[in-house]
Image (cartoon, rainbow, N blue to C red; front, side, top):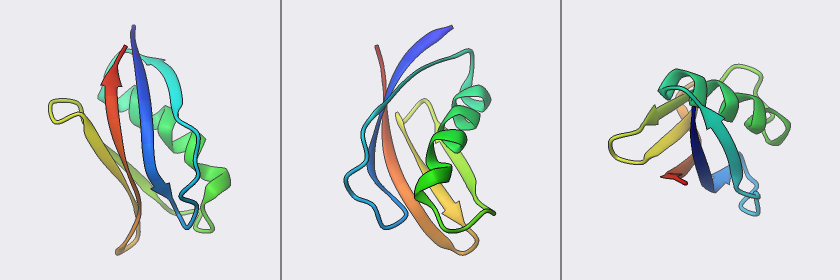
Length: 75
């Protein structure tokens, strides 16, 4: 398990989102944790989380709209 700190630019319309400290074994597990964390901030129930560990960033897509962007840092 690797510890990550995920800092959000925004989730949905909320720009004041606390960072997420989480442990994950790989990018898929990290995306699943971010997906759970983002749910209360989004109106849409149909959204995906994309994680790029090499770039240290990712985004939330709500259909054709951007539901947010975030930076990923290994702790």
